[in-house]
Length: 310
Ligand code: GDP
Ligand code: ZN
Image (cartoon, rainbow, N blue to C red; front, side, top):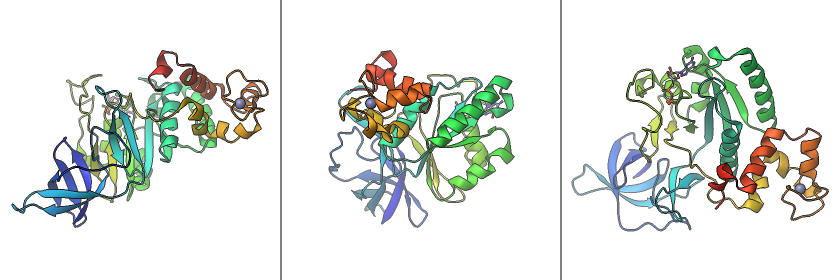
């Protein structure tokens, strides 16, 4: 039988079989992965072959299908190892807000770099538009223009407003959608608006909720009524960037990648080199300063960038 892993707790996996049944499965033997040193052999979104066990109630996973893509983060304890968060993602949505808690542009850029590196189309969703100040709305306009030009679709909404999320519900139907964002931006609220039957706990409903309380390391994937899934990722602070080498970083900035060949030196890393097309573009405003600041921050390894380099 064939199915998709929708939940993982370490040794057990919930598989949604292609016939619509949910079956708890285990792994048989050792899995050989394509050169990835990961703490978990399988993740949500993985397509697998499985057989029913003798008890005919649980299943045994016998093979994993080739992944279209996958997203990883560094394992907390074993620095050389990585943890696969999810696989076979059709689109990654980054939920941000220009109200409280304001999302930094560095965070947005790092998310987009990760998506580029893993070949996952990305969109930015600006939430809480109902409480933006005048300046907030102006910034929204500026950022929407900036990121749309780079190829990332931008949406603006209030997750509290049912009519605002309808289009997103339609967009997400029949595909695998990763939703990320800092705690407090309204991720649970949005997912509940899209799929009310899920009733995820939101800060507004749960007193116990606060930053840092999310200790789950496994992402969960929720089937959508209209078909497809939403993957809710816990703690994405360490997301991605683990496999990216410094000299490759500019490849994941579409606006830099497009003009790299115009730099005088083919080995140019766009920091201090003469006749650098990227630096010139920043100076004449074709490349946004905020994007270049993110680039330099990661390249030069100050506190923020350091984590993402080795
Ligand atoms: P999560 O940590 O990202 O899952 O955030 P929650 O969904 O728990 O939302 C955090 C807080 O923001 C809650 O008090 C929500 O009611 C509030 N919130 C979410 N979306 C919106 C919105 O569009 N507008 C406003 N004003 N508040 C929102
Ligand atoms: Zn250059």
